[in-house]
Image 1 (tube, rainbow, N blue to C red):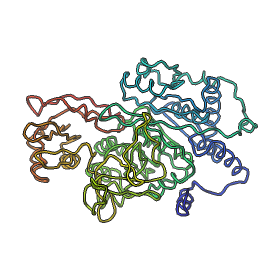
Image 2 (cartoon, rainbow, N blue to C red):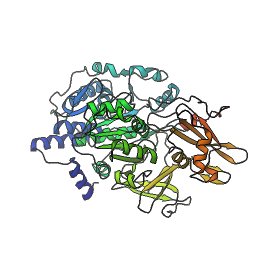
Image 3 (tube, rainbow, N blue to C red):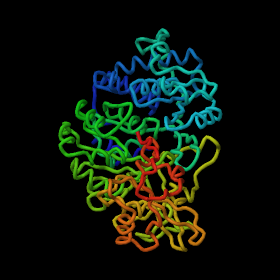
Image 4 (tube, rainbow, N blue to C red):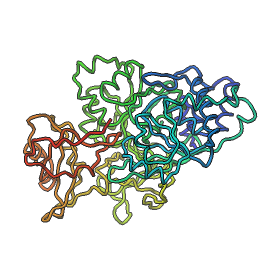
Length: 538
C-alpha cells in the first residue's frame, strides 16, 4: 500500500500526473486489466505517451505505441500455442528490442517468464528446464546450443515475425474480449550462481505502486528520462529498471554486449540521461584515457546507477572523478529486491557505503543470536520491504527472523545510519583464529594504481585452518610483494594474503560478480606470470 509520502514521491517523479480525461480512462482500464506488471506498465505508457521512444537497440527501435501493437500480435501468437496462465516461457537472449517484446508479450498473456542466464552451461540450462518445464523457449540463434539438452520447443528472436503472424484478435484494443482481466504471471529470476548451480527465485506479483515509490524516494529518476541499461535484463538489476521505465515514460536503450566504449557510444548517440550499469563496466569506463572519454558527448548524463555486485570505494571515487557527482549505488539482491541506496552525497562522505534504506524498507544488523548489534559492529544483514521474493522454485527459502529476511551478507550500520557491506556471510575466513573479511582486503588492494581487478578467497591450510589468497589482474611490473606490503600498511598482519596469484582477468558472471568457485587453480611457480583465467563479465 502506498503511503502519503510515497504518493508525494510518485508525483515528484511524474509517475502520477494530470492528463486528459479520455487518456486517464484508457490508462485506468489498462491498469485494471493487467495490473502493475510489465504488460500493464507498457500498455499504460502506450496510452499516455504513445509517440515517445520505448526501447531501442543497435538495429531497431519502438515507440510505446509501436511496442504495444507488436506485443499484442506476439501475445496472440503465444495464445495460439497454448501459452497462458499456469504455463511458463523460458527466455534466453542478450539485451535487445526482441527480448523486451517477447518478455512483455509473455506477461500480457498471464504466463510465467523464466529468465535464463547466458552465462550458464548447457548442462545447467538443461537441469533448470527439466525442473521448470516451460512450454516454450525464446532464444537468440547463437545461444541455441545451450538449449540442446532440454526438450522444449524454441522460437528464435530473429523469427518473432512468424510468431506475430497470427491475426490480431482485437486490432482496436477495445473489444469486450480485450478488456477481461488477465492473470498476472510471475517472473522467475535465477540467482547468480557464483558458488554453485543457480536456483530460480520467484519474484512477487506487485499489488500497487508502492515498489516504484520506494525506489524513487532515493533514486531520483524523472519522467521522460532515457536509460541506457548496460546490465543484463535477465538479472534483477536490469530487469528492475526495465519494469520501472514505462511508469516514467522512459525510453530504454540496449546493446547486446556492453563494454566501456560501446556504453559511452550508446549514451552519446541516444542522448541518454541515465546509465544503469554494473561496477566492473563503470570501472572500465573510468579507466579509459580522458581523451577517449571526452570523445563521447555525455553532457546530458545526469545519473549513473550501479548495482549487481559490490562497488568498491576506489571505483566510486574513480567514477566521480571521471563523470562528475552523479553516481548512485543500489544494494539489493534477487531475493530481497532493494535494500539500501547510496546517493552522491553518501558516496562523497563514505565512498564504500551501500547507503540508506528507501521508504518502506527496514534494515537491521543482527548478531549470531538474533540480537541487534551496536553501530559500526559487523553482523548479519536482515531486511524487510514490500516485495521480498516468494521463495526458490525448489521449495527452499532464505533465513528469516521476526519478519525480516537475511540478505546473506555481513555488514554494519555507521552512526549516520548508512550501511556498509563487508562480504558474504559464507565468505568469512578464519585464519589462525582471526576473522578476516575478504572484501575488506580487496578494497585495500584495489587502491593500488596498478591493480585492475582483485578477488580474495580463503583456502584450507593445515596450520592456520584457512589462508588468504589474492587473485590480481594488474599492470606489468606489479609484484606479489607490492600487493602484500600495501595490505600490511593498512590492515592487521593476519589480513595479508599468504599468496598472490596474477591472472589476466577474473572470471565473472554477466553482472560482474566474481565466480569464486573458479578461483581454485593452485598458484603457479612464479606469482608474476598470469594464470589466464577467463573473464565472462560481458
